[in-house]
Image (cartoon, rainbow, N blue to C red; front, side, top):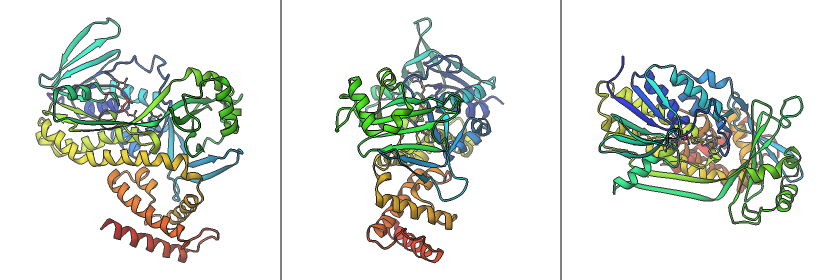
Length: 464
Ligand SMILES: Cc1cc2nc3c(=O)[nH]c(=O)nc-3n(C[C@H](O)[C@H](O)[C@H](O)COP(=O)(O)OP(=O)(O)OC[C@H]3O[C@@H](n4cnc5c(N)ncnc54)[C@H](O)[C@@H]3O)c2cc1C
């Protein structure tokens, strides 16, 4: 049942390859153009985050396309954060008080590979690697490419063009050139990131707990580590480019780098013997939020994934949100089943359903940086988190913290999760700060019931 439209997708990253798979399942003819070589046969991980946190929104999207189980085979569950202080002491904080709620560490390359392989199993999908999109002529529905192999430029026509080419999207740049009403903002943090590695031990096992996302919170900066299947950890240092007591610009000599790690992350330093080599060889990445509107023009072209709404990585939701885009588009396509060739209508309905949620995860992600690098080690925050865990454990169907609403409640939008979660946070924090509740003694169910009711009442008032 091939549908008449020829779909062209620019970018076979996480979003583009899942989109290709889903559109192929729906019967479209799909041509995908990717600037890089095929990552299943070439090592192109340098400079990219090697593993990612996959959670319920992303899993829902993978389920829709029938690839959830395959992805789960390469997932490592992380049940909570494990914080490391300067003395090497650790304390754990679960992600949820409910059993069975956790996030997953997954290899970006392996997950992308699964999606490409599944997409290619459909005879109505062709993936063309090593072809970089240069420009899109929206009016004419033509896309200009350059082949890395032949160095020649060529043009392809399509009925509908999807730009899933990431934060630096070529389609978005074409919109900027062609449409005066196109609005785009790209805000970079003053902090950047660098990836390092903790190698597996001699037996190939993890040197620190693989059941946690490790955080070394240091106020203005932090180190995090996520486990890999081969026993290693991908470590990421988030630090100011030029600002702060320590920053990337000043960490220019071997002495400075060693001294910084010795003072701030001594336990991590013992696990990264090649620190100097890695620090010098691995690039420093920028972190930014992209917002733009409209995402589509003329019923011919649309932006999805990071191309439409790149976010900073502190909620672990960029990929999840990009996958969720495919779920939302699929739902809209279901609604327009009888009118499936009216892409103007489809794109308009999609943007209406999605924009507010994409904006919300952009705000939440920036907010969560302060939580991860600083608040997690703050006594008031720790107390609030303990009460949230107790509430979730005691009232599993009635209380969901902001983190749970964002991460484990895939059937509500990010915007709803943000507004409800923020109101709850405010209510709980004011109770903790006003010494109205304390976890110095275990709270009884009756006491927790009082807290729950108060939080619900205050939240209700704030959301009116
Ligand atoms: C340090 C870091 C950590 C992160 N951690 C998490 C996490 O834990 N959880 C999470 O959910 N998200 C995380 N993210 C976010 C996540 O990486 C992105 O949201 C996700 O990759 C978006 O997928 P995408 O397909 O839209 O874009 P991309 O993954 O960037 O894919 C875009 C694709 O388009 C190709 N392309 C680019 N330009 C062109 C062109 N001109 N022509 C043809 N092809 C082109 C690229 O080669 C690439 O394959 C993290 C991001 C960073 C930077």
